[in-house]
Each structure stands twice: as structure tokens, then as C-alpha cells.
Length: 321
Image (cartoon, rainbow, N blue to C red):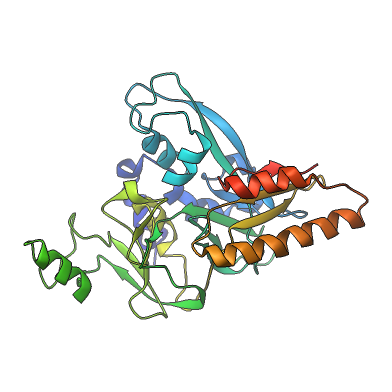
């Protein structure tokens, strides 16, 4: 099978000009020889030391831009762009307004294999398999997850099937709610612009749960689904053909991440947890671990700074030394 046949993105690049993510499959093959600046946004060579990739940078808003337009073009979700730019209007940033792009990431403290989804971070990490001599890579994408009462399930699972142009069968709960509003949905929604699954879906070994596209991309980076993991259409298309059936999927809720740069700097990052009780316990464990690591190196910890980061939980990466 030819490359163009396996990766439909190559036939529709003009339609996907909002992002260069769909080129990831082609670029990944030559990643070992490529500079990181040549890779699509959100694609990084794994660091030999430390657990941080990417960088924070700024761009200027255009006259017609919304903050969501800018976020999507730069591989960032709704909550990420909003928290990084709390004083900028979502809908009318204004031409020339400087917008911060939070494109630096602390890799989850999990095995770097398959797919890791951090629901607290609203972000997916994909570690594609590489051949001998190739550079290990990570790709990261903003996602939408389950809203209150429809939490995305946690745990280790795997992919079981890939569906191109899937039909959607509204579950009984959705049909009941719609009927109560006087707008009963059809028993099945065929492929097309009205299909909430988008053009691509990857089934998980958890009945009823998928990683899929969406016909409402403004919801990426929010807790808005009924438990499934949503991706921008161009993002799910980018990975769809490259994620083998049987790929491990590790779904975690890690609201606190501790980072170590290749130069030895230490950083902390906190998000709002989906489970407040779990957040409290992890806060204690992470801070104790962090203090111990620094004390072994003869460094002091600014406890007030750590407390402030945990209290704000705004996703910003803050240096500790």
C-alpha cells in the first residue's frame, strides 16, 4: 500500500491548513535527521536527560483571529490557552495582541510507550514505535474529556479497532434527554458533518469508549464529552493510521507534574484534578518526593512558591530553582 493510500491527510492537506499535524507520519520517518524546529507542532524528540520538551513562546493575533483559532493552530486546547492568557478576550483578542502559547510540556511520569492520556491536563501523549537507529519521539495533542457525571474512566487499556467514517448510535441516555426536550435523535447518525464522532474513531477495550474526532472542535481542551476522548479532526487523522490495534492506552489523572530539564533545573506544574480527593493525596506525595530529591542535592525548597502553584492550579510551569 502506498504512503498516500495509507495516510489520507496527504490528499487533503489544503483543507487542513489550520495545522501541520497531519504531516507527522511522513516527518516522523526522517525525524532522526531532522531538527526539532522542522517537526510539526507537538512533535518532539524524547530528551536524553530530564522529562521536559518544547518551549513557551508568543505570537501576535490577527484581525480576524479568536483565541481558539490561535490555540488550534498551535496545538493548544481551550483551557490551556485561556489559563496562559487570562486577560485576553477569547473571541476578540484584537489585532496585534501578544498571545502566549504554552507549548512546553512535562512528560507524564509513566512508561513512555503507546498512548498516555492525562485527564487532569486535558492532553494525550503518543509514543510511536521506532526502528533501530531511529530517534524516540513523543507527540502530544490537546483533547476533550468527560464532563461532570460522565468522567473519562481511568486505568490501562488498549486499542481494539479503527473505524473510518463511523456511524454514531446515540446511547439511551442521550435519546432520553433529547426526547424530554422534544427533539428525539435518530437511532443512528450516518457519517457526515452532523456526526459527533468525526471521520475517524479508535475503539478502546472499555465498552462504549473511544478516541475520536469531532464536529465541534471548539470543545477540544474542555471537559465536555460523555466520557470519550475527543481530538481535533486533523489530530486524530494524523495518528489514526499509525496507532496499531492493540496499542497500550494508559489513562491517568495526574494534576501535579514535576519537571527536570536537561540542564538540571527543576519545575512544577499543577492542574485542577477531576477527583479532588485524589488531588489532595497526590499533592502530599509529590511535594514530599520533590523536597526529598532537592534535599539530597543540597538545594532549598521555596515552600510558599510550591503552595502558591498548587493553589492556583493554572497549568503554568514554574521553576523551583
